[in-house]
Image (cartoon, rainbow, N blue to C red; front, side, top):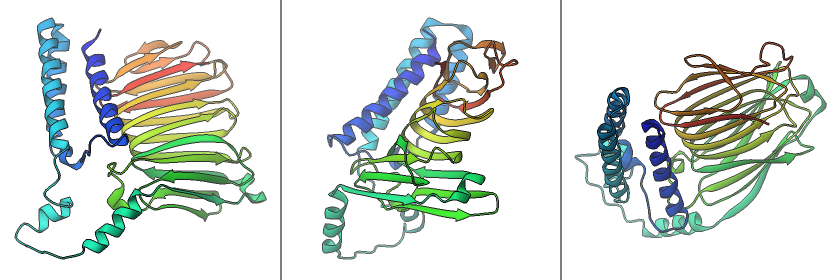
Length: 325
């Protein structure tokens, strides 16, 4: 097994394990304690490049050992309660000692955070929506997104969770309807200690969709086979992405940029598909594709098919899988 596949596998197991332990309330993990040690991953990447080139078994063992030790250190560090409430407090309040008694307010906030809320947000569908493209911007962290099915509205979202305040806004221009779904409470965007949020989308099949997702950490599982998706763009950190596309439009553009992620993309066999990659240490599995040159892959029917899907993958330590159905 290649060293880079072992590295991303261990990293994904670490992140998934931490998130799972948090969701079951076994640990409290403070991710901001970890970000300050990001140069560790540069060291690991450098070791991987050196030993992968020499194909040294001893070097591979050293790289894996360094990775395990580093992740063990981060696991312990991440469970320590931060000395400061935020980076702002750390950088600008070093010489200020403020003691404010607000136990009652904290108690009320904790009660509110611990309650699971369920609610819906929606935007109506109007006849003129069909003549324009619909741009859906999705932003948040610690969220699991799913596409449940169709709706007679333009969009509706069923939300279940403990953290943050969600909003759905619509702006109409001459050429597009712009929808923005986001987690508004920035203080809680990266705080997973009180559980994650689940968002189930229903989309109108008549609309022409451009979907742009920015996900700090979390998951997205969406089946677009019955939807006219012209563009799908994903920008994520530690995330799991499982997406399936259809062939209702002649061209579909897919762009995925990720840090440490597990990305699975499925495309129809009757669509010609081209993949361009800039994937660093990421693992790649492109079933049914021919390698044209470094970083370029195509299906055998790419040039002849009237329906084409263009995929651009850019990742650090991720697992990219593209398959045909």
